[in-house]
Amino acid sequence: SNASYVAIGEAQALVKRTGDLAVPIALRNAPTKLMKEIGYGKEYQYSHDGEGNFVDQEFMPADLAGTALYKPGANGKEQEHTALIQRLWRGKYPG
Image (tube, rainbow, N blue to C red):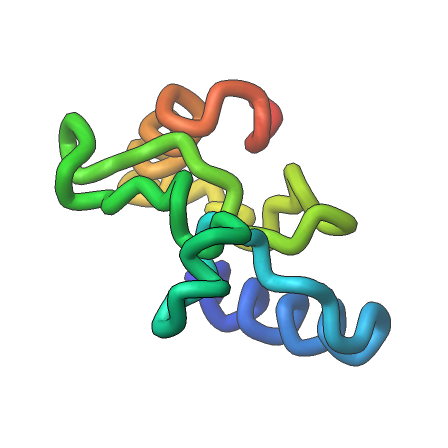
């Protein structure tokens, strides 16, 4: 399937439509004391520390929260992947 390829194209088109949006505070690097004090990176969850190497954390800018770009196809492996991402992301990917 070309689901990943299509998702990349959708992501690129989304960036063209929305322009520069703020990176979520939890994902921002905090190389300075001030940045640490205002909370950059404070709520970051490292995926590999989560059960099954997954954490339920929003990685999109606030204006795009809940946006799902990857839409698996109907072939066997992608059906398995659909079930997995629906279980992990609870509602972000419709059934």
